Image (cartoon, rainbow, N blue to C red; front, side, top):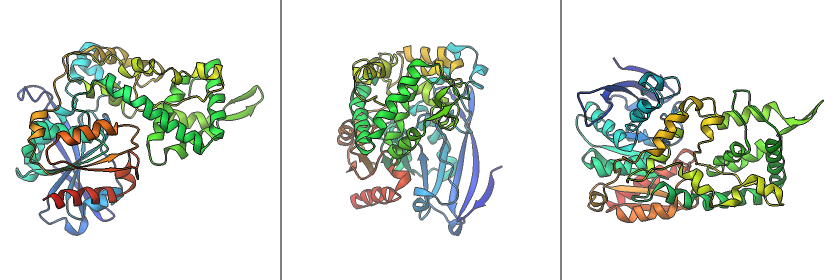
Length: 432
């Protein structure tokens, strides 16, 4: 039985669905999916078209809105919205250090997790769509990794899509993980340079923190081993609209004077562990690089290997001279499975996934070239997380896709500016 309840301006209904773990074996093992339906209170009884939202990640549950926040307010003007927890996230049979041992050992866990990529997410959507829409196609809104899933949707089941809207999430159709990160590190370096231009004093502050971490063994209150590489990874904030300012505020009060000298303050450590921990989204770390696996090559810890090609990111070398310590971001490394207590029990599983070579293709270039679904995509010119050049190559490869290239917003533009959704809707409707 579905449970409905109200928040300001919206009626919410919980839905649960049972789907195959492996859609190629519909009679085999099943998992449970959770999704939350949202409809404007004034339109709750109306027959409205459906919009399914695929959030960023991988590994994050759907956004938990309160009332009509952010882009949801605009969507509710005309849609009944389904906020889907993609498999393994949120309340959809979560995959964590606590639950994965139910599968058995690391090899069994790795085999299980091969079913948690975009192709399976698309098949999940197709399994639940007829139960909600009566068989009618729906509008798909994909943010970041949700956009990757949307391109897979257009490749695997375009008959289920009425309209596709993508924000910050047009993937390369062909790039290996190595190519993705080889393009990423220069973008990250530019974001760091822009941050230091905005807050010059943070150069000294970051160097001081990095030096402290290289010369002290710091363990955060939750058991996270706070290494200099972990500190550098806080640069993931720089890809968000307010991230540079948040990073600055974090750095400015890092140290406190104690009887034994200056130490990293409890307040700084508390904030750092919240930003660094994967306890709430371990699937992100486990399958992040596998979202680029489509050929016979392993991903093999691509971000870590490719980082060696950019020695300017080596904090020890920076401190040996007078250069700035560079932050990183949007990368997963094997050391995270040693430093983070939420990931340590999964390090062997992660290694097995990194070594796999049997990933199935996620995109169908021929089908995309013949696409008939109206598609619009926001491409953020300065996006730290998704390479704009790769995105525009894919935009040109999808027949009829209308791109909107802008440097007005960062990767989280959909969250910060409902105008983004308005613009995409106008693009597809102008085309129609």
